[in-house]
Image 1: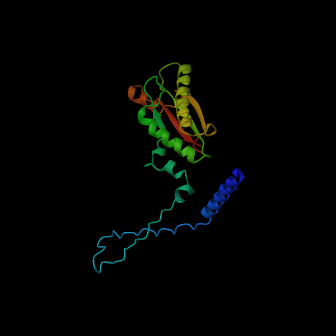
Image 2: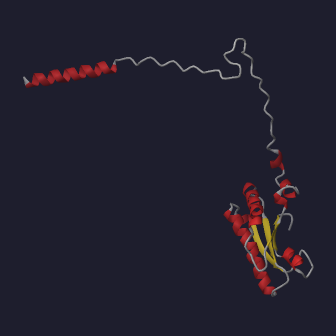
Image 3: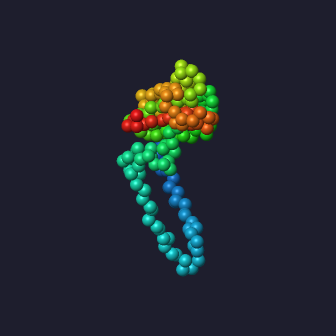
Amino acid sequence: MRATLIATLAAASCAALLAACSTTPPPEQAPAGVEDRSPGAGKPGASQPVEQKPIASVDLTASRQDPGAALRDPSNILSKRSIYYDYDKFDVRDEYRGLVEAHAKYLRENPGAKILIQGNTDERGSREYNVGLGQRRSDGVKRMLLLLGAKESQIESVSLGEEKPQSEGRDEEAWSKNRRSDILYSGEY
């Protein structure tokens, strides 16, 4: 009796599974309608075609043909190449961070570009001290460029100390012009 009951239950389960597998899926739902929200829609005789203006084209290859053009354009930040320092300091002031960021971006986008950073000082201090300070200035700019994505192989930093003054005067105005780092691109040095 027990075997008959198990056989009956097994047959009923199998029949239920087969019945479930043979059912047809429900019909697909029709897509939702789209409202016309254009001005004048829904008014009699208001079906006017929408005027489509042509899209303006932009030539993106012109700037890529001569990437160095930005370096020579006086209205471009990349044409500015000097970073000035306070007396006896080598940290880049906030006013020059945008300039360094722009040069870093240029180096990232132009992996073949190479620069030389020349650290300079005013005439005050010993020759040895000024050479060391000039090197710290150029190395500081180099570190910033590297942190902003430029490659080590693109940048060389040197110190000129007091040997290449921008101004020959012996007052604060002249000295402030001599405390600088200059960025030179290959072909300029």
